[in-house]
Length: 115
Image (tube, rainbow, N blue to C red; front, side, top):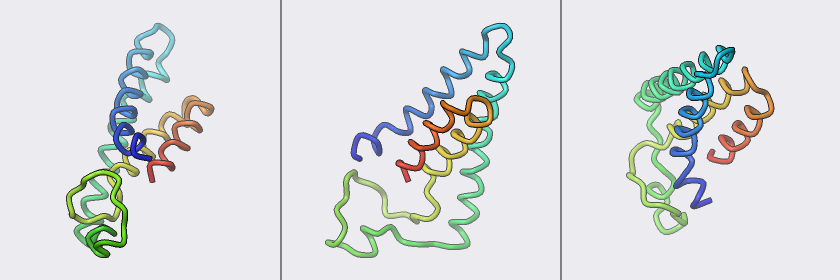
């Protein structure tokens, strides 16, 4: 879980970059479109998260219950809902799923594990 929490953001960014490079191959227009849609989708998800967090502020479990939650990685005590990491990861996974279902399903499972 520590490795997943620590490296998932880098892995999803790398996936989008590799996907975009794969879209440069002639005849791979769907990959190119997905590589552009993935960061746009994750950006939209993060924007929606900001609006939701303004309307519904929920403290992180380690801040709300000090001493009762084991913290794997240090994290600021800002609002915990909704999760930016999960929203961005799921948005990218849905885009990948729409183009390549096997890779998309794997990506979605990893995104859910991040959650």
